[in-house]
Length: 322
Image 1 (cartoon, one colour):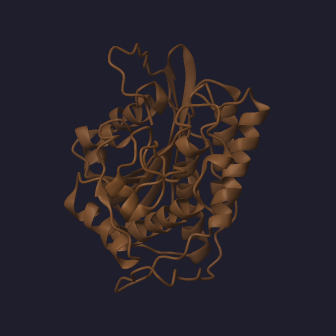
Image 2 (cartoon, one colour):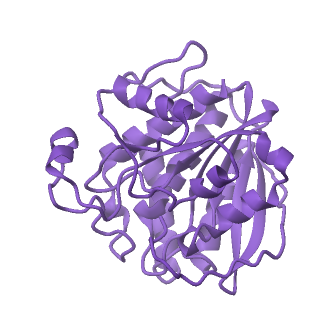
């Protein structure tokens, strides 16, 4: 998630769009298990998202950061290596991937999108997250957590052979930490007709905070209810997300008239006694004490929050695309 700073100097001159050819084999058709505590819809039920798989992606992002100066920031080798890792997984699973190139602060940045074959192209459900870290750390919660959960949800689509009514598109944004540059570039690159085809954009930025809260965006009533229904079904109380309002990649979509929603587990705001009574954790401490710091490593993740939010992502993707 980007810092909430006024007067930040941003350079967002767009330069080019590069589409890379997708490869890989078709996805298998074996069904994944349904989370026993999750609500089920009347049609296809969302699978459980294996927390071990999400954490394996986080470990890879940590290794990439460690090998590239301790970060995965825009314009740095660690960011491009992160994108290549995600893209390779999606290509092998049968997605059509595209890399979109842009320029920000004198460096080249990249967005990655992945389309699952089939579904009504006039009704597109998107799920996305920013893939870049700040330069001061590896960015495992911010936002390896969202990026890894979205990746594993996409791979679950492939494993299950899911055939939704609507078209599914997943996205990983660059240069979010410089002011939502990548996602804004993507939205601006779409014509009005293409933007109108997006029936919903779901954003996931920091979903494994070590002193977690359970926050749901309240921008679109249908999307908000979908997430709240999931958490109600597993006995978790939620609150409306306010800390990151307008500070993550849903904002360009919302400003363009696209319905948006998402999840958040908290950044540098401090947990209140009322929140600790609902969710556990430590009163008076930040939701993420390592926010935008070098200690945002794989040790900075709450497994329970990451697991619940990952399953909630899959639930929403399935429910909203049927």
